[in-house]
Length: 85
Image 1: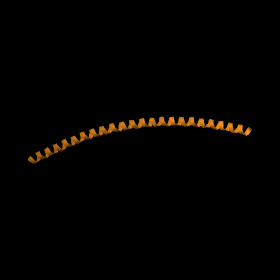
Image 2 (image 1 turned 45 degrees about the vertical axis):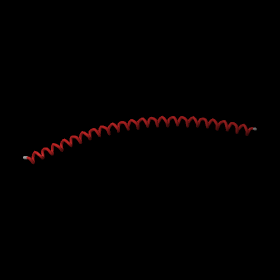
Image 3 (image 1 turned 120 degrees about the vertical axis):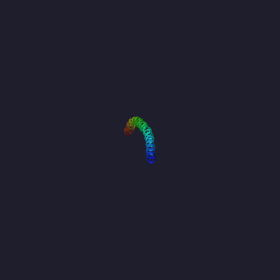
Image 4 (image 1 turned 45 degrees about the horizontal axis):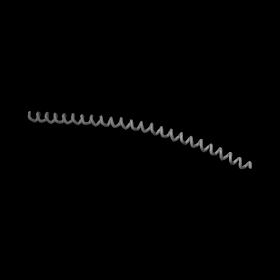
């Protein structure tokens, strides 16, 4: 009977330890879930900033191309005037 009581006590200790381990695992899983959610939000914000940056850069490049085209036109006009002289 004493051996049975010892086994029951050991099993009760194991169950208690398993319950504590499960509770700790739930806490860790909850923290990991919050971390993943936070990282996803940061990545989403980063993508929006990158898109805005590329749009801004594209606008500046387009404006520069227009300016260069105007310069080419003016140079062609000057060259044409020199050829006429």
